[in-house]
Figure (tube, rainbow, N blue to C red):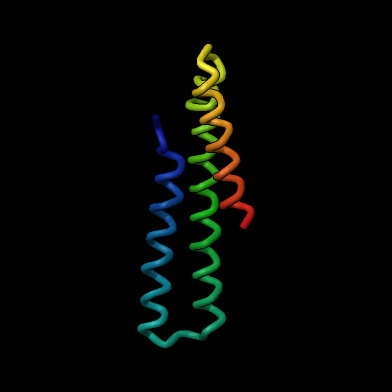
Length: 88
């Protein structure tokens, strides 16, 4: 499965995280550091959303095209558990 879009967000988040660490080392203004950390969080959320979207479009779709009811039930439970974690 191609997760190139998610990797793009993760690379940007990595750069922003490194920038936030440098800002702390350079004793930058707290609000600026916090904004940088918020940007990292937003990018991590986008990456996670993309991975979940990819999962639904590939693994979940394949499971529901299958005749195996056990696999379908397993995938439904996976999505429910993911939603539980995301909505925490």
